[in-house]
Length: 98
Image (cartoon, rainbow, N blue to C red; front, top):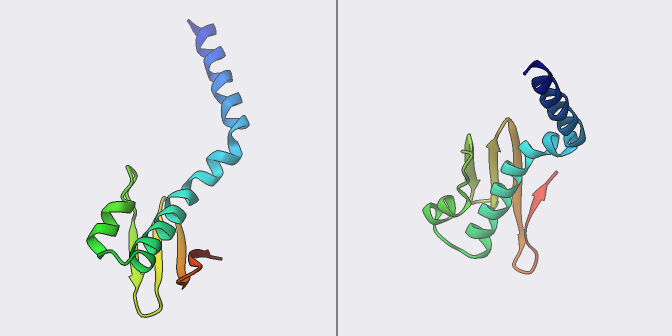
């Protein structure tokens, strides 16, 4: 039994080492996706706030989702990361800001 647990632990550590970059990047995906999609939903497609909030809702909750309609920007925070997206124009749509 001890040997099986040791092998399982080594396999888990090997998988974590192999997937370390993806695991590091994962928290940013939630906020970036939410900011970009919410911006597109609101400012490109012109849908209502409630609809767009439901549209970007994920299994993992956001800590914050704020829009600034006067400058057409969106801030999303989740899993300790934040991302901002802004409307660029009718032909360009929205993009993530650095």
